[in-house]
Length: 60
Image 1 (cartoon, helix red, strand yellow):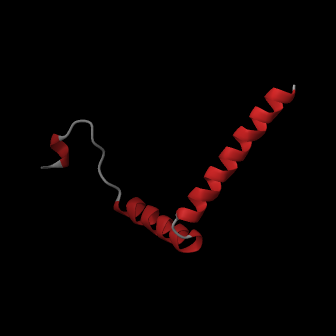
Image 2: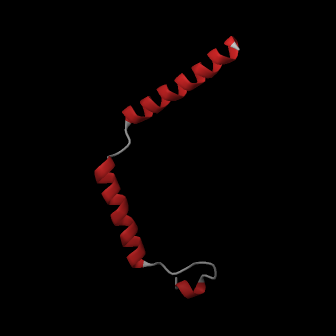
């Protein structure tokens, strides 16, 4: 299907897509895949914050 026939679509910028892919690939190599440990630590932080809020609400 020609892109001229699609009224609301914009033409794909090949250079922009390649640059976006390169940035995402570089970030993946530098940071790594967010794994189970990151999710567990985020969950523990959330539980800790909720516990502090509950404790403070009972004390005050």
